[in-house]
Length: 374
Image (cartoon, rainbow, N blue to C red; front, top):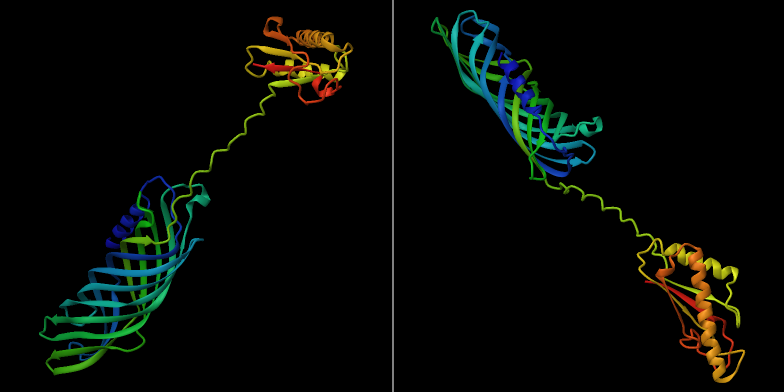
């Protein structure tokens, strides 16, 4: 009943509902734990039994006990961990069964030593479960010393036996448990686990002293393998816990290129009619005026400083020519869908050349109309 109750408690602690990401350890960590230690009844072979008058076999029954351990280890980042553990176990002994005469037994024992464990953390996210709990399983092997504190059996016929001594032996264990990530404390986990420790005693026997009708007699006791069932709560801290990765940077969508707000239309010498290329540029300007915020379209005409008529008459002629060029562009804009009342035209003649030149020079880049979107 005690075993079933402890197993149920461990299962409930490991399955507590939570919500967050679980941690897979990378790098060094420390682990501490303590809990309940339940030892299976232990079968022993007793020599010089004062009750039986000869060698006999009987069973020691254990009562309550406790365990504690400390470990240092390394996580490899892929769920696999390795650690070195020191452990201490204590258990009360309250009965010796199978003797020829009834009696009462009182005593305790303890074991201590070290084991090397290999464990594997199960990443539940691989199975679509996103919780801050990491189940783990493991195995270990090492060496434990078993010490019996004076354990006395008083028989109803007045005889007494006393057991004691220390011996060591190979130990092994199986581990199953789960770790819960403590919120807002990176690297810190609460663990709940079950361990089964087995131990052999091939290295020697224990001392027994018997008192009975035949006087004081000494002998020894050899035990079969010992099995501990342990239910443990603990704390584990991983030192190299990386902070959660920052959220991905927002994708910056580059703004669409802004349509040009100034367009240049060029003319042949002494002409104000539009070439095919000029009509394409005017159409681009008209289309752009529908995609950008435009309140007014300014159309400015220019000429170079050459003229079909020299002198002041030539400057006057060029002024008129620049206005006619602006009017041609305006008419084309209107044909392309631009409202007439949105267009202002100006003629500047030979003023504001794009390319400075000497007098009476034909310069193609100065024979232009500028379409400016405001």
